[in-house]
Image 1 (tube, one colour):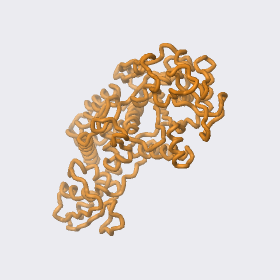
Image 2: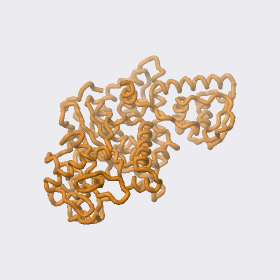
Image 3: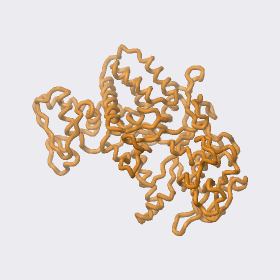
Image 4: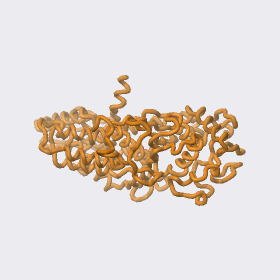
Length: 512
């Protein structure tokens, strides 16, 4: 990659801006630096595949900007106080913070397992209350907010011309009851389209002191306050899911621009597409709702990452068995080629510079991961050598986050070589699956790195799934690499869960 931001005269990076509805050349407030805020989770339940799709997309944005030489200041918030969190804390009889912290930990562990780089900052709503109160006071002082019977509201009519900038809606198109967590039915509202800035506390609810009475913030003001508190009056990129365009992000435009009188506060609005399952929107009511942990029970985490990145981030993605199987096949080939290249003593005869240019052109075209991954597939299919390993590390690894650490791959290859030697000598071993606990086994279980490597081979080489709790034997007759993998994989399909690996950024943080 480059050591500094590329010159726009050579290869401009173009980003689709939801507000202007066009791809625009990236122009940042500070040369060589990108300020990026992405709306984080509301941690009331375990994270799901919709979360994974969003934060993988912005992980790649983060990675490509850094690979291009930009210093990225990445902020992702946690909405750690919310009606749903309070409902669950009441039902469980625990403090709301217990629910929030539990699900934040689950989210971070899942992201680590999928090789998502940590953001630089994770502000929480509960840690930003003074700044939120100050912002509401400013809006009230400028005539954009008023006090109702149950809290403070933003008055839409005081900001003409700002409505619908992300969705194209008009004020007349918005009906009462739309908008989810915007308190449409609140008492004392002057207009049903006005939204809550501060909610007065109900009996027994956690609350904070304010000039308007004890309470807690409304949903939209939280992100405005957290982003402006960190970046100041303007920043470069604001991201989130497609569903956040309205009301959440349009409400942020109202609040932030009326408070700061800076326009625009955000340079580029970016939104990722929905996740569908078998052609239907993923939802609990349809029975097709997958948490990330559910998905890990059936799919190798990095293979799942491959699948979610194989569709451009703005497009909806439909998770079907065929789609996931195809992605796993390509992922298996990628890791296999990487392992072969790591073991090679010579360089390939293929000129990789053209592939690098096409890869960069794809990523510069609004982070087009699909086109970039086609270039990776072409390299995997046509080249092998030590230089290919380096190329894959820089493109498939550093930028797309699709490769495991090379030491894990080499350890897996060594384990495979050792096991093949044992098979060739005529020894017979068998291991139970993870679900057959308590049953004695003969021979040592394979290392986790070997398990990980071999599981990458499962769908493309065998097309089979091991039976839960089943014993599987292989004998000296299975002496070929193909035959050995076929038998070995049937044993390893349900072995001990894969643990998350430490990311490069975490290693740097730990060393400081």
